[in-house]
Amino acid sequence: MITRPDDARPDIESAVEQALAGLAQPGLVTGCRLIRAGDEQYILPAEGASIATREQRARAATGAGRRVAHELLRRLRCADLAVLRGQLGNPIWPAGIVGSIAHDDELAVAVAARSDAMRSVGVDIEPALPLPHDLQGMVATPQDRLGDLDSGIGSRILFAIKEAVYKASFPLDGRVLGFEDIAVDLTSGEAVTSSGNRLTVRFTISPRILALAYPA
Image (cartoon, helix red, strand yellow):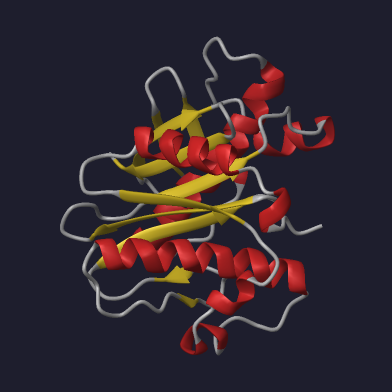
């Protein structure tokens, strides 16, 4: 069920926004929104042309993410607010802007910066729960280093980080990557892709797993 304003938890929205802002580097603006019924209204006409018709819940999540993105673009004094959808589902930001959008079942988050401050950026949000066991083997590789993290919650953190890394890496070279193409070292706070991109990774666990990645 899509969260409605009357049963929403604004404390979670505020806490996630603060946690995400705490991960951000100078020049990066961040935002968060609880997904509400009707949020599909925030998909601009230009964006709707590139976003295929989908079921209502998915469109509400997309609209919530675009609503956050539009606010970030205003904060960056960007006149063009449309964030189109690329053929591979990647957001296409206005010229001079880099950014990333993500959502879970309840919350949408977005980050953005001017391209003269940051070359690219990726974000992901996940519930603070262990990854299902059958997925852990798909995400982790022998090259990954989780440090002292428990393998249960560590697997979900690794999943979120690799999602963020892929989002930050794709604008740099246009290469589609699998989990096996990304090696994460949480002891050094870095990730390296099979295409040679080296990225800084940052994460937090509470109140959601939030992961941020950007070129080192």
